[in-house]
Image (cartoon, rainbow over all chains, first blue to last red):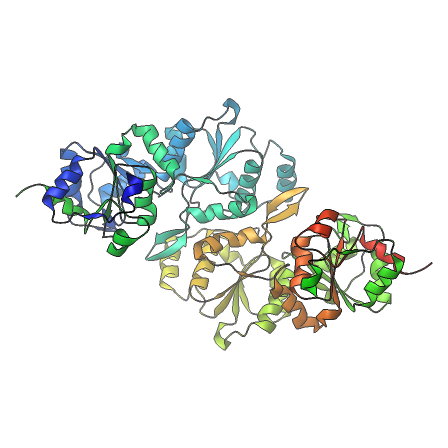
Length: 313
Length: 313
């Protein structure tokens, strides 16, 4: 059905009360992209809170799905709260949490290879802890230093004082303290057999109305050195969908992905064979893309709050 | 001729005195790859010094061509000397020097855009100074720090206190102190119109019998963020050949590239339409690659010192 629907024109639901009711009745779970759907930057769209309330009132499960890897779910809940959106930590699914779930519940790591070497900030560490996944690296100040000639020899020799033999996974997210030593260690862990994971592969990070290096660009040196892509845990990677399923055990056919970008959000839902995908025109993709692009949602709205018209007179 | 010769089987010259004499007579200039040709790691091949002496005695010009970007020519001459190979600074052509020549003699930069923003170590700085090219960044300790929230705002706004308006080139080489701030600045300079150059695109650096992040992996985040490849100044990039020509004004038809790797050295000579390419079997590529690979030298030897047989009884 997902495949088929990406070929046909999507249904335009704004102002179509019967169509909205019919659409909503098909789903128990709604996965929400956030920026461009619920808000833009620091600006909350009017009606966002009421729309989420309506869905909850009707027994729908809500999951906020974000590629942001620097924040933990608790951090992200605070962000939602700051924007006036009530939520619980359990409703939030970030790429760092997705990675933690993937490592703890999907990967079958051997007993002696369960440690994760992290390139990233505290958000990743908090989520690994929440799943009891042991890790090294990350924000540990011991890794925030120059490489020494002793490092070269020890790393090349596989010395256990610099390369922990229990590391079975390298997880790369956005790291504002990335350096030569960290990249060298990640390269050698992967060469020695560790699984190469990335929280997400977004090459840039939107900030201050411009762009800065994103989580994807942290993996770039390793991809070039290894000639190998990481398994990415952010949208549109299906490893993230598997993680969401690993946690919520939902029925994909009764689940709808809501997003503003065809190449990430809508593709994420279509490739995940969800029952539905819903585009909104308050973000990146245009109506033309929704209607005649290569990747098309099942339905679309001018704005998320148009869902409110499914109720009342 | 280069094109043609890459299609036919190369001539095997070891032990063929007449063939050697005929081959040598065709060239005035010999461009030498170093590691795998003159030495391997710290081991000088027997006969290297005598072979270079023979060429010099017969009036041949010698140029040592290396992708190493961390060393200046003076540093590299010391390395050659340490291995027992007499040389002059003028005979050495490194990728950092190549980049400097390319910037000073090939690029036509506008008067107010002549400054280079450097990601790299002191070797690059020394070579830029040797060509009187103004630069910022590099080993300046002011760039060896964490990114601040003030940086984001100022960089996004194009504030001249963080983004020098005279920067017209970003030059990326191997930098053991690469960090988030340096990559963010490079990205914004290029987005604002600076030319994106790399000393070389070797993804790894051989060290201690293993591999570590190379100059190419420093460019990788920028390539991913910008979706743009740099002009690379190392082998096999023809920008390096143009730089060598820019300095020596040699006759390409009377020049021979000597190397051990088909995909860098031999390709470099063939694409540069040199009169000849000479492979040696003391390095990476095998006889099979020389004889029946996609990229074939005009001639090959078991070892460079086999050239000595062109003289004597």
